[in-house]
Image (cartoon, rainbow, N blue to C red; front, side, top):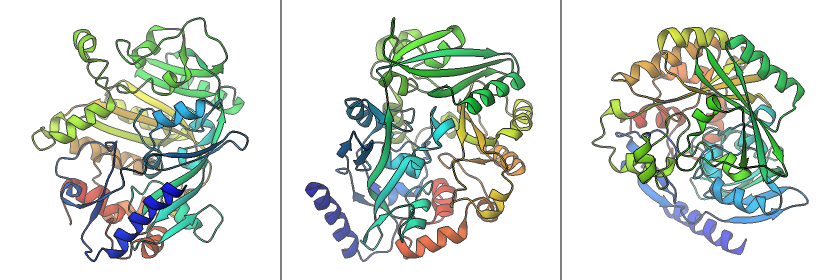
Length: 438
C-alpha cells in the first residue's frame, strides 16, 4: 500500500501542477481494447503515465475480496486468485483487458446472467480527479454518484487508481455442455429456463446461423477426464458447433476467446500452425494501432455489442437477418442488477425486462461500415435497447443524451473534471474518435 500511495501521490501532483486545459490521455502498459480509430484525436493528446498502476494489493480469502490497481490484467488476476480457490465475479473474454478498463467499458461475460457486469461486483473505487484530488467512492458514501457514473464512461470523469471488488469460489476445471436448437424461440426458452433455475455457473452461446443456435452451459468441477485449450490450433466458437461437451482448465475457460470471439486470427490452418501461439487479441490490436494511419477503413472489422431486452430479441433478430445478416454472433445473457445511473431516466422507463441479451457482432468487413453502425443504432433506439461505445458511434448529440444521463454526467463532471481535460462522454466517444471536435 505504501508503494501504491507513492504512485497516486505522483499522479495527483502532476495534475495539480498542470496549467494547460488541453485534452489529456493516459499512457498505460496494455493496449486499449476498443476498435482501432485511425483519426481519433486522443493520439495527439498530452499523456499522463499511469503504466505502473498494475499491482494486486491484497486478496482476502475469508472475505472474498480483492484490492488491486486498474492496470492489472484479468490474466494476472485470475492466476493469483485461483491460488486461493477464488476468481472474480465476472471475467471478460480477453487476457489483457484490465480491471480498470472493465469498469470504464462495461465488461461482461458468461457469469453475467447471474451477476451483471464487472462493475456490479465492485465495492469501492479510489479516483484521482482532474484537479489532483484523491477521493474514495462507494455505493453509499458522499461520492456514491461518482462511484456509479464511472461505469461505462470511458475515463471521462477521472482516473481510477484502485478498485475493491468481490470474488467467488472456483474449482480447477469447467465442464461445458452444448445445447443445440434449430429456432430462436427454442433457444430463448432454454436461456430463460437456465436463468430462472440459476442452475449453471456459466452461460453464453454462439448463434452460428438463423437455423443453428448453441447454448454453452458451464459448471465448475473438481476433476476432468481430459482438457482442451484454445490458445493455438483449436478455435473455440467452432467447437461449440462440432462438440457435445468439453472440459477446460478454469483459466483456459475464461480466455477461450482470446484469439478472437468469432473473428479468430490467424484463420488458416497453416498460419495458425506457424503463428497461432504468438498472435492473440492483444498483438492484433497492437498491430492495428501501430499501422492505423494506413489501414483502409473497410479493413477494420465492424464490432458492435448490443444489449437487447429479452422480450424484444425476436424483433431485433428478424430485422438483423434482413438488413445485416452477418453470422456467427456471440450471445451473452445479462442480468440488469440495478437501474444504472448512467442511463437516462426516460430511457430506463422503457425497460421492463430484467434479462437482456448481449448480441455481439465481431469481424464483419464492409466498404460502408458507418452505414452498418448507424442502422444498428437506429434499430436499438426503436427497441429501447443500447450498445456499448467501444466502436464507431454516429449518434446525434440529442439522440445520445436521450439514452445516457446528461444530468448525472454533468453533475459528476463539474465535481471531477471542471476544465474538461478528459473530454465529455459524447465528445470522446462520438466526435473525437471520428476526428471531430477538439
